[in-house]
Each structure stands twice: as C-alpha cells, then as structure tokens.
Image: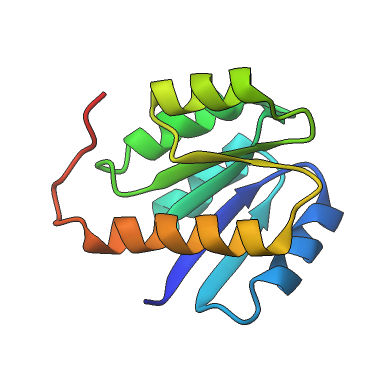
Length: 132
C-alpha cells in the first residue's frame, strides 16, 4: 500500500511532527493550511485520507467531510483537535468521519489510525460510496 494523507491545518509544526511519525510507513503526507488549497490538491492528486483540524481558517471539519464526499466516497476523513472529546468523536462518526485523533499526537495511535484508514480505502472497489 502506498497512500497519501492530506493534512489540513493552519499549524505547520503539527505537519512536521506528523511527517516524522509517518516516516516508517508507506504513507505520504501533504500539508495545506486551508480548505481552498485542499480542494486544489484533491483535484490534482489522489489521496486516501484527509486529516483535518476541527477548526480551519476558512471552515470546519464538516467542510472537509463535504469535500471528501465529492470524490466518490474514496477518501476517508479523520478529525483532529486539542479539545477532542466524546462529543466531537460521536458527532464525527455519526456524520461520516472515519475517526478522531486528539492532540498532542500520540505516535502509535496516529500510525494505527492512518494505516487502517488507508487500508480501508485501498480495499474499496471503484464506485463504492459510503452510506450517508
């Protein structure tokens, strides 16, 4: 599996930490700081996962979820937030996100969740769209 993760975050230091954590996995990480740039990336490159901050400079994680749905359900969305709690986790999963990662990032958890999300996307047949 050779997958790519699109990280939408206004915090480049978080992107650097994530990149270091994922070096041992066959996952590429591309960082953009807003939804507009994320849309451009998705139009030009395939991604297995969108990892989105809960609150973005030009929107929220729900906008990232809508963006992922434009790509035939073949992109998983994982939400991340420093204040991730059971309420955010329940809301995210109920609305279609794959999972929630709390910050600060815990490397084994990041690797496990991203690897599993990418594996799930790789196993889907083309044209499969997750039920809404």
